[in-house]
Length: 211
Length: 378
Image (tube, rainbow over all chains, first blue to last red; front, side):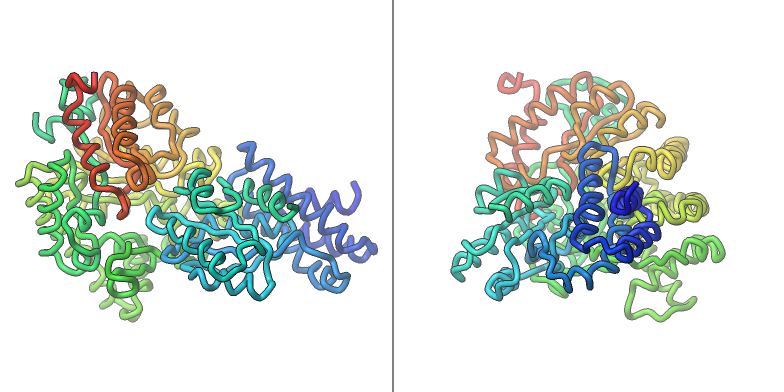
């Protein structure tokens, strides 16, 4: 087993100490940071996502794998910055105005980070203007909106409209999700895509930033 | 038949005559909409709440279950920090719980050392920024729970006068689910891997006191229904093996405990329970109500549990809020036809009716149930 495979195994199995140790060994062995990231950490979280969609992994397994990934990433980040390694994309994620739910949003953020995206977590009860500000500052190329209540779903439409009004709608892709949200609703409010769970959100995000 | 009779027959899995399908959309905060009031009105005044309930019943027709809990007591009893309409939110916004870690990992051992009862009261003291730690504050919290039970008793009596049985007179979380809420899903998920024995011991130490606490409002009111909330045991949160290891035994024991006392548990199961449905056959037959939302396949539940447990649900919140009335009617008819076949079904909403539900859609639920068996629906 080569070193990135060791890291891969540690993350998939959810061992943070082994993931961290594996990244340390790989760094000392001179393996490029980008390669450690892609073939070790990101590949592992992709496998975790596959297992989640296959019904083999559930939320706790995703979270312990994510913890392992984050343990490795913490060591790797300075090297990634130094080497000018590019992320898969920069995502501003938040639960929309009036909604305080965090669980779904947090899971999506964790999985997107595991897929190599840079995350700007705006938290909950996020005003449309905050999303607009992130796009206007050139910070992000993807926005991820979460809503867990039928009463706050309209804030997704309001947020997208705010992007249009500010003249930045074409500068960013918008994906939406949350328990009451549907594909049809996403289309209705003008989102670019709908993710029905955290793993699907990663596939969608990859697809959206590549186009 | 009256509502009590419809409900009892459904719990016993008896076929009901035409027009007697019980219907009970879960309406608490939506009461304000039906009454032409704001959320702040029903949260700040028991009198206003009672007026709202009366107006709501007049508006949609009496359902077969109502809710005796004063809305302000709902977030209080959930065991998390919360935001209230008029105080932290707009006057007509839905109250919300703040999902964050309140219970610490050290609490698993602390509650075993202090005893769950004392720990539980200390926990609620911790939640209240105006209460310092200590015995006096525990007493204040205890009095708040007693006051909640007394309000339930008063509200329940008024509902009964309107011919609307209260859905339940007391409620409880299984310890596993309470800890999941109190630790936050992120931390609790890690606990299940990092310290599973600690979690299990704490759950076991908490079960009997939880049941004892749940019995208090039931004894005070003479009520015969209790709600059990296994909110975090579904496969939306944990894998089926974890459910078997950590949660199943307690859920069974809780159901058996209440049934032995002649009390009907409503097991309120939000999120996806489809893979776990067979386990409900390990609970007392024809003695419980399994309440499902639309993340669980209720038609599969009928296949697996139709001869075992009364099912309640599951008109989706999205349909009530955004659907056409014809769509709501069609789904209700499908539910009654398929899930209600042979009896053992209560038409309900998938969890609470949302604030933006169209009133005509909620009315449609009642009308379809009352009209079932007429030329239109046969």
